[in-house]
Length: 102
Length: 102
DNA sequence: CGATACGATATCATCTACCGATATTATAAT
DNA sequence: ATTATAATATCGGTAGATGATATCGTATCG
Image (cartoon, rainbow over all chains, first blue to last red; front, side):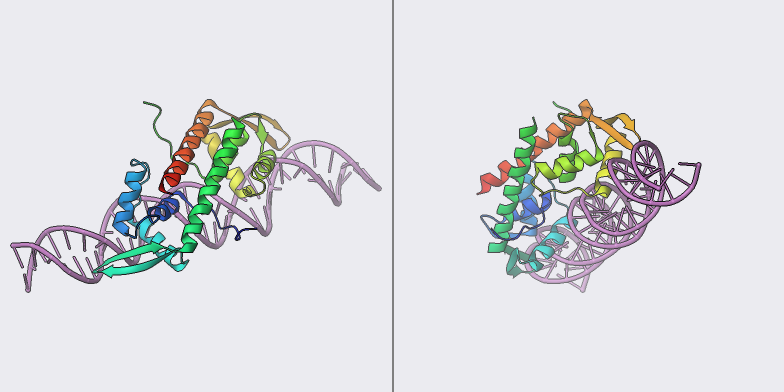
């Protein structure tokens, strides 16, 4: 019924999208958000992060809002928000599958 | 406090370990279990599956119980059960992080 | 017995993602 | 002008996913 299925997101992808839910963000801010949000459990190296930002922009999950010197700021698109919500559903399904087997 | 953190499991790894919670399993049975359990959402190719079984055995998350012709059957070790439970916790944490941001 | 079909597992090449180390770039401070 | 700083970009190495194909062991058929 809904939109066609997207491929599952990896954990870094998931947290990067999550970081945009309430504010525009630049790369460094995302790194800090993710580390804080997960109590240090998830840490994004710059390789992972900037590669992802480039890919997300290509796929139109995020879009650039301003450039200030070298600093680039992005916000989530509607498509990006949907991708995040789909991933939440996927996580719920995975968790439920596991709990059922206990 | 608890054991040291293991690296996060991928979705295929998670479902393969899950398949062993109640019965010993051989490769083909695992493929079928995972596909059925997830209503077709997750599908393991033979490459993924047998590579994982080999790795899990090396890491002593599973152990072989019998061989019948070419068919090899495995069961979960205690270490394997712990790895699965840890992954459940990780999923819970991810999901909670996401829901908090909504 | 040999050939063949079948069930199950193993291997391979290719692709995608992660990641840290290092380089680059733009601005600000001295 | 040089240096420092903040932020982003690139690169190489490694791990995992995957389907196509190959292999192996057994049973069945002639």
